[in-house]
Image 1 (tube, rainbow, N blue to C red):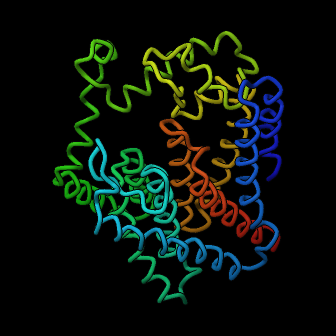
Image 2 (cartoon, helix red, strand yellow):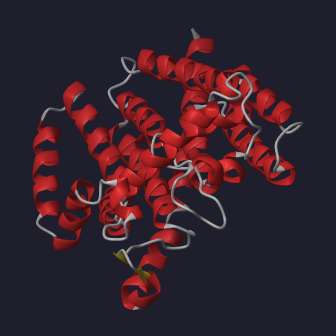
Length: 341
């Protein structure tokens, strides 16, 4: 499993030799190494199904603190209100990070509810239902549209492959959510502010997705100056002023891991990232037939790949810790079955 990560870690480390942000690049590399660590840890101590169950309980029970903190935000909404309105972020530094963390919590709870491994854990399953439903409400409250989309994807995939009635739940839930004015506004915002020239002429602001497409286009043009090895890890922000038509004193992040890695690590780094994602995706797809709930893990991993399309996901420390710990624990538990056979 370490070999899946090794090419990406090596190219990140090598790029520090020519990055303009050496210390930031080194710090970010060390952060990614922690993701490797939490992914590999379960392979060392999961020796039985009970060990796997305890790992999932750790994920679920540790969500109590950020979920309880949400009540403080509801009681004192001013601290969670900005130009985009009221957005939950709990103990995290941004609503997006909280939203994606909750996507993992929802997936773990759903997995535990559906898994026969937890057949004797009746009380825990009841708690999972409560946490799952409240987490879905909080995800709506973060107003993170990509998190809404991947939650819908999780339910859609499970409904298609396992229980068709969940497709009806998805339609019903989406309909109810769209009846909330603030949710409607976030959805309709996608169709407004899509003209970059309008922003430059000071009469219309870009929406967040249109803003992303502008910076991605500029980065891809700049990328062709050094397409093989890129400009060095964490160099995107440094060079953004050279290709981003919207001026910024501090530079701008890529908000797309694939574009970021192409720019910073070149084609070598981009394919190193695919070397990590594709084999794991293939493995999780193969495991879907071993138990009905396994499709949830596959759907979560697909969601993780999609999230990288629109956010600076590698910067979301806690989300990556929990996500990779869950994936590692799941694979480690299935490795026990292989060894037993």
